[in-house]
Image (tube, rainbow, N blue to C red; front, side):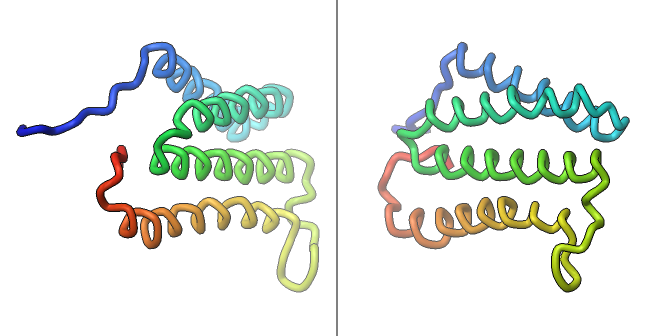
Length: 132
């Protein structure tokens, strides 16, 4: 491997990322088992840690874009879970769209952000040091 650079994650960041996965799994497990209090309680630590991770990695556009997409994903997923828990997910918002479909907004924002990164930013800045 000639002159290959590496990206090292500090141990305290890695521990936080691993804890983030634990919170996320408990949130989704609670949704699956309809444990409303635990599922709702897990939203804040899951979202908070994802925001901290994005902030810590803001120096790399690739990391920032992917971590912001995760924040959008958790936001959409959490809203969808709440709408399911409180049974307003099937109520009609307008036309064929229900309140569950509002989760599409952050999902689409995450997809658009990653599309921007891969289609516009990455080709334009080929020589930038990135993790992706």
